[in-house]
Every structure is written in C-alpha cells, then in structure tokens.
Image (cartoon, rainbow, N blue to C red; front, side):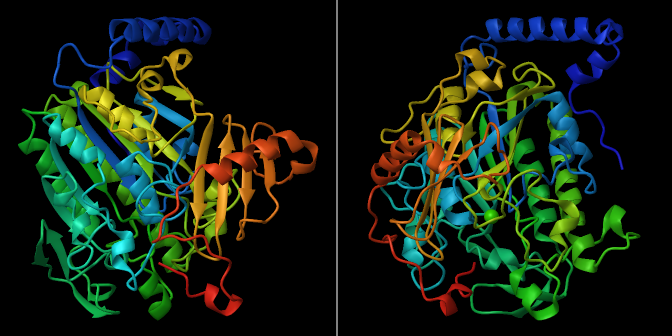
Length: 507
Ligand SMILES: [Ca+2]
C-alpha cells in the first residue's frame, strides 16, 4: 500500500544535497529555510495570489487522535495522511469544538466556543430547530463567500434540514453548493438510498431497510458508498473552480458507525471492501473500521495528487482534522487500535480522548515541510485563520485566534488562548476548560459537581486529579466556567436524567 509524493518541493528535497548532510546540519538548514519562508511571507496574504489561497478543510467523523500512523497508530494504514504530515505541519494539541458532531461543527462554522455557539448538542428529531443555524448566525463560509470565494460543502452537515430547521440549510449559511447528508441520523447510513444536491433529493441505487423517517437504516443492496461519491464531487469541484479562490468543506462520514446497522446486524462498519485487512484474523466490523480509515486516507491522497496535477498545490491550504474523538459503536474491537492513543476517553467524554483530534496542514511553500507544532488551537480558530488568509474581517463576538503564524512555522509570534471551553448536555450538564494549554478542569454531570484538575504537561492521560494540590488554579477555572457561557433556551442547564433514560441519549 503506497502513496505517491504530492509535493514537488518535497520530492525535490529527498534528492537534494541537503538530504546527504549530517542530520544535525540538515535540521539547522531546514530551520533557517523555514525562517526565510516565514520572512518572505510575513503577511498571510500571498503576494503572488492577492485574492487569498484556496482553502480545503477536510473533517473526518469520529476519527480518534491515535488512528493515523503519523499520530502513532500501528495497525491501521494511512500512508497518504502520513505523507501529508511529512510534507506539511502536524499539530499535537488541537481540539474539536465538542465531543459530539453537531456542536463541534457549529463551533467550526461560527468561530464561537461551545458555550456561545448556536448548536450545543445533538438535538435529535424532537427539537430540530435546536440543531439549526439561524439567519443571524455568521459562518466562515459566508465570510469567505463575501471575500470572493466559491464555497462548497460536500458530505455531512447536521446544522440545518428541510422543514422546521430550514434556516440552517447550507445554502442559507454561506455555501454556494451542497452535496451530501443534511440530517446526521441519515448520515449513519454509508449506503443511503438518497442524498441531497442543494435542496433536491438525489436517488441512489442502494436498497435499504429504513429505520425511522430520516433516511437512516442499512443497505440490503449496497452499490454506492457515499464517501466515494463525496470524493468524486470534491475532485470535480476543485477542477471546476481552479481559476478562482475556492473554499471546500469536505465533511466525510467515515469512520462513523452506522448505529442502526450495529443494532440490527452487529456490524456498523459497512464498507465496499476490507482492503488490506481482508486476510486479518479480526472480526468483520474490526476489519471494516480499519478499512474505512484507510479508504479515507486514499481520498486525501487523491485530492493532494489532483491539486498537484492542476498546479494548485502552492495556492491551496489543505487542513485535515476530525470532529470529535473516536467511537466504539461499530461492534469492532476498540482496544485493538487504541484509537485515542495516549489520551483518556472516547467520543462523549470531555477528557482529552473525546476532544483532542488530529490536525494536519499542507501547502507547499507556505507551510514549512515536516514540522510539528505544540500550538494549542481548536475548531473555533478556523474562522480567524480563514478570514486572515482571505483578507476578510473576523465577525464580532467570536472566540477565534488565527493560527496562520503557526502554519508558517512562526510559533514565537503565535497568539495564544488563555482558556478553551467545552460542555456536554447528555447525561446531565458537564463542562471542561483548558487553562494556559496545560491545566484541564472537568466538571461532570452537575453544575455543582467538584472540579477535577489535570496537569496535561505531566499527566497527558488525565489519571491523577490534582485539584486539592492547586486550589488557586481550581478557583480560576471555576470562575471561568461560571462566566464563559451564555444561556440558551434550546440548551438549558439540566441535572442528570434518571439512569434508565441515559442509554437512550444517543445520536
Ligand atoms: Ca462526529
């Protein structure tokens, strides 16, 4: 299983005299070269391309911090993303907007943290308007469109739907074009019998057993794999817009589980084939889960290769991330892959495993090659980053710091967050905050629960609660948690539900 080089710069460097120098000297020269790149591009606006670079934001669904080779994964093969990291920049402390889908994507779109963004949870079918952006919300897609970008969303949305939630439809929220799933229950099904092209239903040749009315269910005749279609659309969109700045939000639905198929058949990892895992002595869903991630990896390779062939690589910033931590809902063996890497927890946890995710950045000549940054950033920072690159203003009332300096290897000039914030409304109201990139406060299920405190610098796995040893830091985080959020009538602070109802809080 291979993946060809995407970047001409990277290809050249492997054969340059530099590569034959002793490692220390090579590292020094690389460092000096990175400084030269940064100096020559002190402004984020690309002088050769004053309209701003193209931006492709790829977000996987429920991909864990430890599920890529470049983040330590040993069993699942991700050669293209590993190469993307070698040719670009890898963030070690980057966070999703939330520990589940909808609020994470709301943070990503609005640049407001979880306590202030519109959609703060997976609302489900009972209250669709609570999961819809409104006309007064200003998304990063709208900002980029007004700056002259062609904008497209391909894949899963989850922040608006036809009917009561129509205010949040992608084309009312800044996207010129949409192809994919509006409803995230529908998006559980990787072989759906329809998708949306803008506001029109497009029939697919898959035949399904429907579960509910959203399009969710599972296929009995599986022909068209949705993420394959998304890859084709992404490639097409990039080619058609090669002559103007474009923003593509490619929102994959793998490796999310098909929860309905898990319940019915015990296997929520329905893929066209098991790829390199067909011969492994693993259960079908375990093979399927690994195959989903390797398939995802190949899509990214295809895109980067395509950008290279079109001559767009140097004009296009590609970011790859995930919307929350890994799930364990396909019937697969989560222990086999250690999907959170060294972190504690999974999706739906406010511990690091639920919210810390990969971020890889790639743009030859702009993002220095082969670097790692410890800059602490999160989904909400994409707004200010994209706005800076496009030469646009950041909307007021956001919680967003551009990470362009970090992208260019200028970490010493990078502004930092004092706090990052998350909350979670299932199983009672929980909150978490990260102070100074180091001190992690977690309060579970009740607003009056004691605050847990972890020192991520010495205890990445959050195994030792040091709250009693640092009452001053606890008090500081406690004050922040009480003041960080705004009230939302759609998302009131509630005590934990009775135990028997907790199992139903799923989406
Ligand atoms: Ca997700």
